[in-house]
Length: 325
Image (cartoon, rainbow, N blue to C red; front, side, top):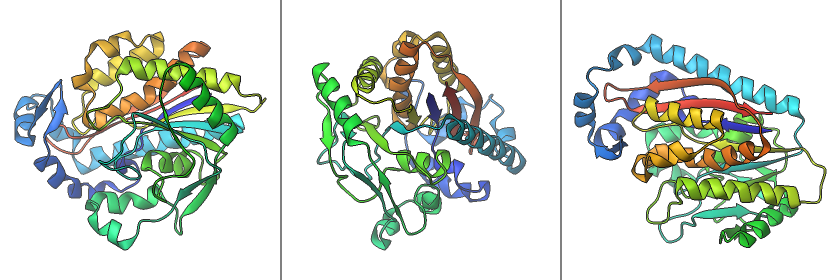
């Protein structure tokens, strides 16, 4: 089976705290429609979209309720599938890597995945919203999860044979799991995770971000690696991240959903790499999973799509919840 889920902090915090995100929105230049925009420029450019009605407290609470229902359905579907092992595709946001080393693709092949709580020093450096959201990704007291080294090594070996020079990690560089993965363990697997193989894609950080096409081809390689693994285990492949943010673009999201339905990534790739920057780059976590599901001939069930706005500039996080089985 396959799952695609957003993982943003708006999913694990109450709408009442989202004013804490506005200083970031107002100080950040946002990727939108292939260019970068200031907050004030976005307000002016999007003045006719009726965004004021979408950021009232009742509207945000309604969006939150839909998101929570979407997460619940994905978690129920995952539990019903009785999965033995999961391959999770996500990204790091300087949680375990830093500017000294950011691999384009990386696969974890160790026995134990650590997801420990932030130190007080680390917590003090985080934006307020991230600090508030941390319990949504890391359980109280931290946790350790089982890896699946044999499957991971099969994926790595096939990737190398397919000329993807992936980084291989037997141990995480830091003891905290990137929140892309912590969200899956806590919210989709409900703190009862099956053994898993984290696969990381550098979606955010220049200069070595893989292209949409490269991510799609990588997904095909991941599938070959899974098929080469000598096991009858039931495997889920899960994408964590997206959809468009921090400036929401519903048109791009709908093009992406059309690509999932059509099993054809070409129109998404034709949008150009300039579109897939900032948080919107996390759609590249979904692209390898889309390739796997297309190769398997599986059709997506789109549980919900929630453009979760938090400002008159159209900032926020578009949330998507999808499964294939």
